[in-house]
Amino acid sequence: MTEKTVSKNPFTGEQIAEFAVTKKEELFSIVDKAREAQKKWEKTPIKQRIKRIKKIKDYLAANADKIAKQISKENGKTPTEALATEVLPASIAVSYYCRTAKRFLKPYRPAGSSLLLFNKKAEIISQPYGVVGIISPWNYPFSIPFSEVIMALLAGNAVILKTASISQLAGNMIKEAVAVAGLEEGIFNLVNLPGRIAGDTFIEAGIDKLFFTGSVETGRYLAKKAGEKLLPICLELGGNDPAIVLEDANLVRAARGIAWAAFQNAGQSCGGVERVYVQKSVYERFLSLITTYLDSLKYSLDGSEDADLSGMCTIAQAKKVEEHIKDAVEKGARIFYKKLLPKEISSHPLALPPLILTEVNHNMQIMREESFGPVIGVMAFESHDEALTLANDSSMGLTASVWTGSKKFARYFAENLEAGVISINDHLMSHGMPELSWGGWKDSGIGWTHGRLGFAEFVRFKNICDDRLGELSCELWWPPYRDGVYRALLSAIKAVYGRGFFARIGAWLRVAKAFIGMLFKR
Ligand code: NAD
Image (tube, rainbow, N blue to C red; front, side):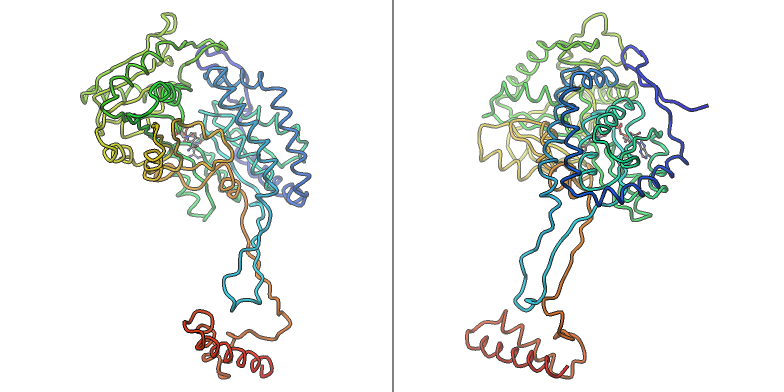
């Protein structure tokens, strides 16, 4: 009997679709077929590749409503969030990469480094890896893998995509979107493997590069596994992201923006706000503004278009958040705010109310680890240096933000925060800007996704060095050295890098003599 996974609405348990599980042996033949198909795809001129992939843009626009509603149903986020953070970024990404792929893939000639190497012509070209594996998480099940799939394909790779088992419907919608490009069989493959065997199987099956987005724990495991084979790997991992609010900030904007980045998607965002540091003079006002704003938002689990906030996606994640809250309260934190939920859903185990903890410190899990849920810890600070020290006191470094009216302060924090993604007077949304390469510092990852740097992860570079004087039978630095090569090289260094006009002229003459001598002697 074929084993299947079931896509369900997390709140009602309603079954939406089911998908056959990919067997381990099947994956091996999928990779082999992908490798064959990729050879032809790589040779397809980039113009043609772009023309095909561009069709996906039209498909997304035509099906945006359907895709958003299905994501909302399977994942639990509100339909507006699904549209804003899944379908819209995917549309922007496909259009952007179709415009930029040619430029990103263009070979380039680096500027020459030395007159002494005048005869060398340098060029850097890029070529696709071959078969790339993409493993993605459930929190943005459509937009995260989507842009990676598009970059990989435009770069000329074949793709094996594995979305989280609970997000298989989202993966299937990517498959449907890619289908309109009419790619040869084997170029794009969606598989449905359980996470616990996916990494080992991908690596054993012989993929050429692995792109993983998920938890630090799984990323660490995969990095070790990939290391054994020296398989290139790109890791986009978790975060415990700080927001710093200065006293000169537009506090209404700061309160709303931080509430959005912390509580949209029920706080299940790698780059969402988890820790907030507010300058003492505006601490009370900030708390009052953010709670008033949260009070005004509609919390619902019914997938209605006007819902502002929704529940969590998995019971396991909800339990982890509750444990973090318990740990904080036991260590002295105060539940400053807990949103009142509609009675009919308040006892649902996934309906965690947005929560604000104060009187927190860095001994609490809530401030040290990724909670990945609708809860933030808020602390007051006195000086900018104190805020920076607190914000940087983390093993992770994915995103961080500073909220201020001062360009000077914004720059100071942007340059000194230890994270790969910095926002000023906003947070998190730059994940939706494909021109901005995205990647974590510290435990938050290795490598980049999005933008020029992210695109570069899907190709391997090759340098080509050609000789303008290839008809000569030797180079100055090839043996035998008895013809005064040492002296000639010494003169060359003095001629190019030495000081004193006359000394350099003399050195040049000696170089010319040695060079001519070399031409005739060798
Ligand atoms: P996870 O690590 O449990 O799973 C991520 C994916 O990996 C899923 O598809 C899962 O099935 C698969 N997986 C699990 N074990 C595996 C293994 N041994 N080998 C190969 N694949 C395996 O993470 P999650 O709970 O799905 O996602 C949440 C985490 O992802 C959070 O930590 C979040 O911060 C992080 N995340 C990071 C980014 C980023 O851009 N840096 C974006 C989104 C999510």
